[in-house]
Length: 320
Image (spheres, rainbow, N blue to C red):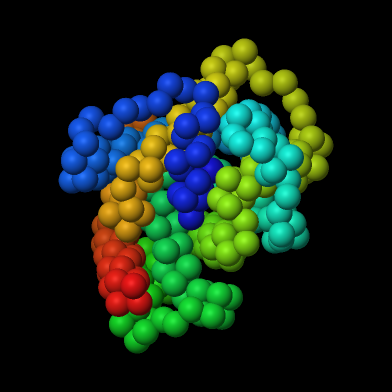
């Protein structure tokens, strides 16, 4: 799952330069623009769920390092083509004030995708995403020590409740938790640190520069690992890989458009609809079981995440 948290500010320039034809807003009113943006975000969540399903199919048959490498090659080509059509082109995107942090971001995201695919194969889509949904709470918890942001007692309470939901999902005292069950928690931690570093570099670099480094640095990093697992895919599996890459580019493009039309705070709650799509796909296509502790624990985590988002919006409104 190659998502781009906190890359939204580059939406206006990136969407205009992207290869697909622009999607015109259906209406001119602010409310209607927000409604269309919400529709796009729900569509993005559905495509992300399909993307994860393709990743699980391919990850079950091939080394995950190989699948992530091939996927990143296409993603990097997409990023380079998009960047080349922007003002200043690739030369402008290379001029970053924080090259080490930008490279670290790219490596972290590639590692997160790799861990997620391994989790899909070992745990299934449903349980992986139920645990991974804790990453917004990790961002809130780590924003203080990493970025120096203030986190009030209400948000700390929500963070604690959210982590209690994770324990309810994993049931560490019930004899069912295995080391593999910690994979989505590790992926969430990597994704949270990636998001915080993205917020950090945004103070000095425009988001289009960060987007370029995300794709290129990640592609180089995963190639150093995945090239040792090189093998040709079966003819039929190239179709699955093509679907995976098309989903990746389409989801990023639609997400760019969504954040161009509405504020991130208005759209983020609808990103949780991916849990619904993942559950449907997991049950119907992969025969996964929707266990009651996963449903209840997932609801606790999502509820805590939504409350944290609400408190962040209130804090931002007061500071404004």
